Length: 112
Image 1 (tube, rainbow, N blue to C red):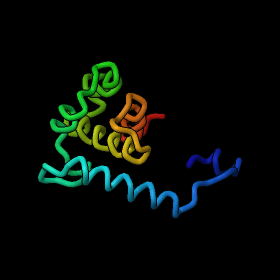
Image 2: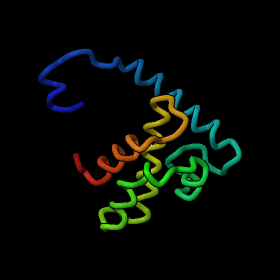
Image 3: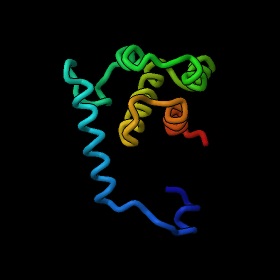
Image 4: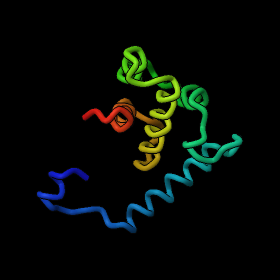
């Protein structure tokens, strides 16, 4: 939610709806990691995420640039992938898109 959202008002998502999306996202993660030693995106290795989702270079362009310029470390890179995967899970998407990766990167680097 942004300050503009607060000023403009409008329909806000009910807490129960958010809780339902979170439950579904956690179930997606449990199902995804059934053969792994972890059950949540927060614990998944970056290498596993990169391999599992077969992310195309174009979708990683902004994240790769952030790594090249030192805005994120490799550890930060993996954390961005974890957040992007969680955003995808919350939306019910099968994999993180370039938009979700860019959003996760902005959250990590505080860019807008």
